[in-house]
Amino acid sequence: MRWVLGDIHGMIDPLQAALDLIHSRDPSPRFYFVGDYVNRGPDARRVIDLLLTLNNARFARGNHDDVLDLILSGLWEGGEEDAYEPLAACNWFLKHGLADTVLSYGIASDDLDWHRYHPSTDLLELIRSAIPYDHKQFIRNLPMRIDEPDALVMHAFWPPEEPNDPATLDRRLDDAETRHRVVWERYRPQQILAAKPWSRPMFVGHTPVTNYPHAMRNDDNFPIRGPMITLLDTAAALGPGGRLSAVCIETADILQVDRHGQPVDPP
Image 1 (spheres, rainbow, N blue to C red):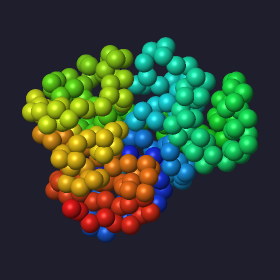
Image 2: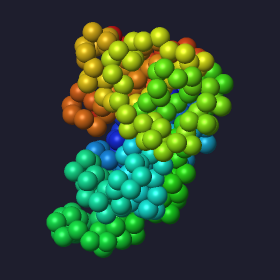
Image 3: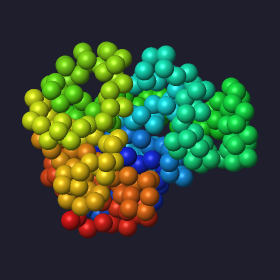
Image 4: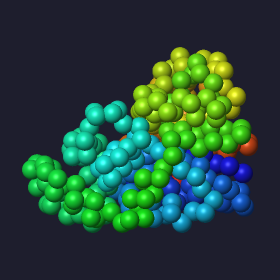
């Protein structure tokens, strides 16, 4: 069966536990990830090391991955054109979890602190030299979407008023503004609850479900479902109540583990 996993954000324990829990219930799972593998949590390097061992997995691009791509390669797929160059993006995201990522690659905290308060291209070189080539390639090659005939996985957003068939996506994703929305925009509650002209159910992360009204959730930190959409960011790296969630495309079953890797019973 196929399992879609929410935002990991550098949290190795819940990632390993979620994969183990799925394997205990499904002898031959396939894994689909909504993006945001790095930042905030302490183990981004170990997370990507583990993801690179998975032969039965596909990965979408998240906004945190996209910013890291800009820092590492000078390129990004969902960024606003000319909005940030790599050093500016680096200084921006050091305040949003990037520091935890680069520390996981062995950069000394004293070195990082000095460079972040004396910003220059030396900071970029420090980060680029610390991250292995295969990790850079993993980030560079992340696609904007994962297409299945009966499902669509993206990081953040697809306009609820537009069709989501592959031909429409191919055409619309030629537009830089649309690519930006796909990895950065957040759904409003009324958009989640609205009927949609979609041919496939969609699975997204990006916005922690606790940002939405409690009436939309089964408990404080459980995935949100609306017509043709499931939101899976249950804030694995954002505080003691964080969880990592997975949903099965075939059965709609949801599995969760907490930030320490312990299974969470469904509400």
